Length: 434
Image 1 (tube, one colour):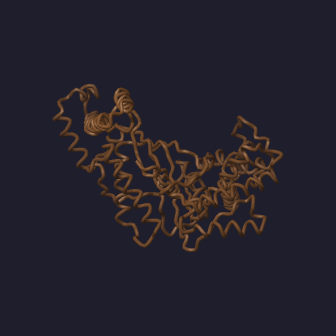
Image 2 (image 1 turned 90 degrees about the vertical axis):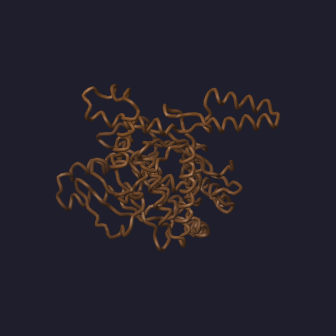
Image 3 (image 1 turned 120 degrees about the vertical axis):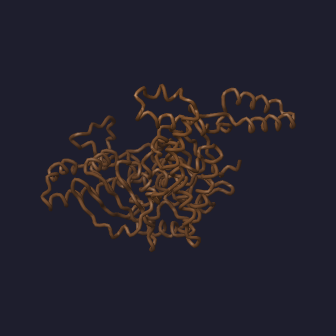
């Protein structure tokens, strides 16, 4: 398998079976090459179940969901349904799956090991609410190009160039407060703004059988409607094709669950977001510009809703640690514009954020902190100020409550207890530059 090729394998669960044909192929290949050690590894893998050989037992999972579908009207519950004749179960499967009654197929959850998925596609998936993800951090892992991979040599050179610049700037201002290791990580975090949002990432993604089929249906729709003259859309559509092929390979797709009669689509992509009026009260909606990198952080707050729209006139994020240095700021903009055709993570997009007041408070308790990414820390502070001012102007009942959160980072909140003091005064006062 190519290093940069998208691959999806299954993590162990109750609905797995070993792909016997693939195991036999590997055994024959090892025998033909007289590689005794390779044959031993293959046979050992069979005994413990190698991830590459796992397939999802779709028929069994569908059958179990069909049995669950009968629980709502059976006085004896699931135990009797579990042991019922399979033909009865299949009739119920046909009734539910062919008539759009798909909620019972949410009872089966599947964990995927997704490799080399473009970051933007991970963001597309992460904007759908029904999931759990554990993703490799792009903030704290170093970027490197590979032959044929998504990261170009030019991006890698710019990334390494700016890591060195950021290390110098951070050390000048915070060298007496931060150790070398932290300075290195913060430099990496800022340099990655230069790297494409199509950079490959790896993550564990868990969702239901029904939802993964919904997502595959949304991908098929996106592919069909992608503008062939838009390089961003074409590139994303190509990645979606690979993902669908991998999902089919591990046997989790059922065309009956991939119907989309309600014509739903991915929630991340909005249109005419600038026409959505801002409002602040028990619920809120606000618009702002953010980089791809910030949006990826923000959408982790699944209690809030996010949509994005790319700007016709491209703008780019300038890290605050260099924004007061005119020469460096200009050099940064020249460099990031030189890779603008690759959709760098520092490209600004228009974002609409909406939700409830209580869930915005939860966001503040995560992002108003010296450990949070600086861009989302600063944007959360701006939204807080805008929210507070609107409540005060309207004499809203929440105006006194929100005031309690306007005196600094989350460690100053009356209802938050910090377990590890950062001892970073600028961070606590929300005026840090890194």
